[in-house]
Each structure stands twice: as structure tokens, then as C-alpha cells.
Image (cartoon, rainbow, N blue to C red; front, side, top):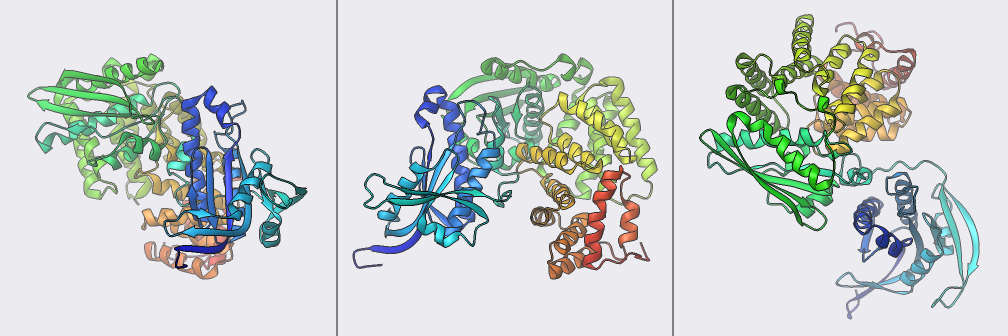
Length: 605
């Protein structure tokens, strides 16, 4: 740094601008602002992941610099590729496209971070020469990256531009391969969610605040929050953030506009619950996240016995405000699902709150949840949330634990499902647990249409999407499985289920030969769920197939510590029966495990 407080340096400078920004704003101001904010998040993630620094994002422009020219070009290509495949690139005249220009030249940086210099001006002029959705680089950048970046460079010759003394030789750049982004927060983070959200009703229900003056009634506020999330998810065309992600904001002083940016939603619903005697008072308000404006408020007083009906009143009010209609009556809760026994309601709400509070449920938590639901059924044997909730807990138990009497537990699940089917046979949760019984019986082909039917009734159910992803994977369709699983992460980017989603998505990528993606996702899974054995052996296979022998051995050692004595023969025996396509995909996993050093005959199981 000089005495004058300036520093002169050589850097790669990236300048980007929206094509037709004024026209986009004139046609749809709100939608354009939301799309621009999403694009900025994507630019920021790409720039930082390629060792760059954002200098400015004023208006519809982006200015950044990089330590290397190749980093700048890789970041630009990554952004354009992701924008092109995102919901921002619609087929109509409202598509948001950027031009990007990159130059390698001098810039002057002040102590406060402000930059000047001819290099900035040249990058801006190159941006003006780029095609919509394209990247244009200077001759200096081309020389620096032509042997380092896998891309096609089209020489566009020299061009005289305003305020630049000499003609600019420039090149149009296109990627030669499919770019797979490796942003640390793209899978399941705010960027991913924002890119996909085009529904006018994208919303999160923040945890309601307990104003009862007694922490004992915290479960009531949590239960109402969960019930509202479920009912909002049944509004046609909605995109509702899962409650597990919403509850990460519980107890925090937050701003609705910040929540909207982080989760990629247009609306935030918040409220409070006050319990007094046998009555409950709920205050609720709907906020537009972009402006922070309060669109609708209401206060509802109910007897405790009617507390579950609050969701109908609130969702109905939101539907009127946003001009949406609720889905078919058959998808809504029947009168028989709305029990009138307050003790049964109380137990169900307590179970929901307990499950929600534990980010990684212990065996003690699971046992207590089962006890609470069994207590609810003692008071009301036909209570649908208790029947389906208890069945799902037992399904989870069979999926995650080695149960000696698995046939007995499966019989208990099927009995609960049969009872639930007498109450509401077409309810999404009933269909889901029925499909899970087929999966447990190793009949995924029977489960698939049932899960699809359930998802039509409850399109924002992240557990349904996870089940669909798992089922389609075992039917030999990893691409479709990834679509379902990524959708679940978009709806629930912070939820407790994301670890298993990372793992299944990682295996799907392994089957498709995308080993780097598989390693990244399985690594995220093992970080969330260190004792999940299948993720450990799948990670070992992915490392081996990618040629990373030492990492493969380390991952295999971690698997052996979890399941000593188990090898390929046992793993093959445990494989869910599937069609020929799935079994062929599975062979890729076994080949990787053999490369990693897992023996064919494990001996002891």
C-alpha cells in the first residue's frame, strides 16, 4: 500500500448486467426484484467459491475481481449455466438474462475497498459486447485461460468501444462440459430454494410464540405451527417451507425480510398463542417478505377442544388474501379426523412438539413419542394423526435399526394403517404409510403409484418427496430420484431429514457415474449422520471409483467400525429387490467397494 493509501494490482475483473432490466421492471416489478435477488445470491456464491470478491451489486449490475483469470471464467460459466437451467429463465419475455464481460488488467484499490482503473472500464465494455446469457473475455484473459479452462473460445475480432483508446479483441466463451456446481449451500440452501420458487404463494410459517406465561404450553404453540404448515401445503400451487427448517428460527429475533431472502419465499406467517383455562387465543399476521408490509392480521379465540380447527380459519384467510382456493374437500381433514376429545388433542400436540425440538431424536425421544401417541389413541382410537404418526415412527424404526422381530413390527404397522384407512382412506398421510408397508415388504413397484397419489394431495410434504426419491431409486431411475430429493431439500433446507437426503442423492449420483458429486453429498451425509453405515460404504465406493484410494480405505475403515465383519456378500443379501435396471446400477457400487478393498466373502455377519 502506498503512502496515499492506494494499492495497484493485476486482477481478473468481472462485470455483469441484466438484459432489458427496465422492460422487466415495467412488466412485473415485484417478480423482477425477487428474481434479481435470487440471481445475486447465485453470483455471490459462484464468485466466492472461485476465490473472488464481490466489489459491488448496485442496481442490476455485478462487479467482482479474482486472483486468477481462470477463476473468473469458471465462475461466469457456472453462473450462466445455473441461470439457464433455473426457473429464472422462463420462455416468455420476462426471462432474466445477464451479459458478462471479463478482463485481466490493472485496478487500483483504496484502503476502504473501493476500486478504480482502466481494467474495470474494459470489463464493462466487454460486458456490453456479450450476448444475452453469454460470457465475453478480452485477449489478455484468453491467453491466460485457453489451456486451463475446458471451454470453447470463438474469436469475435476487434471492436472499437466508447472511452477505450484501442480496439478490443474479444472472445465468446461457452463451456465444453456440463457444469456441476459445488457451492457449499446450493443443495438445500437458500439459493437452490429461491431458484425454484415461482409460485406466487411461497411461504414459511415461523414458530408461533407462546405468550401463556408458562413454558408447559410451549407444545401448544409448536403444534399449531405444525398444523398450519400442513394445511398451507394443501393450497393448490403453494410452496411451503417445511416446519423443520422453519423451527431453526425459533426463539430468535428475526426480520421477515431476512427470512424471505434466506428461504426464498414471498410471504412469512407469524403469530402468538395465549392459553387461559380451557380457551386459546391466537394472533396471526401475514407479511410480504420483500417490503415487510403486513397484508393480513387476525385474532382467533377457541375452546381447547376446537384448537385444531384454527388452521382452517387461518389458511382460509390467507387464501382469500392471495386469491387462492383450497384443494378438494377429499384432501382436507374430514370431520372424523377433527376429534373432539381434548386429552387426545393434547397428547398429539405434545408428541409433535417433542419430535420437533429434538434435531437428532434419541431412542428415548422416539420411545416417548410413541407413548404419547398411544395415549392419544386410548382416548380416541380413530384419531388419524395419532394412527399415522405412530405407524410412521415404527416405519422409521424398521428402516434405521436391526429389529429381531421385524415381522411383528410390520404387522403392527399394517394394523395401524388399516385402522387409519377406515377413517380417511384417501388422506395423504394414510397413503404414505400404506406405501411404506409395500417398501418394507420389498415391493417398491406397488409403493410408487400410492406415493404419487399421496403427493398429488399434499405436494409440499418433504417426507413424501423423500419416500418417492428412495422408491424411484430402487426402481432404477436415479435421475428422477434426484429430482424428488432436491425438491425436498428446497422445501426443507435446514430440516433434520436432510442428512439422509444427502446420502440417497449421493448414491444416486454414484449410480450415474458422477463421483465428485457423490463424494460431496455423501460427505455431507456422514457429517450429519456419522453412524449411518450405508453412507460410509457408499462413500468408500465413490472414492475408489474416483481413484482416491487412500480416502476410500479410510471411509471403508469407518464402515467396518460401524458393522464389523460385514462385507460384500452380506450387503448383497440386504439389497432391496429391484428390477434389472436397478440391480445393474447397484453393481457399480459393488465394483467400487471391491476396489476399496471390501472382501467378497465377509464370513461373520
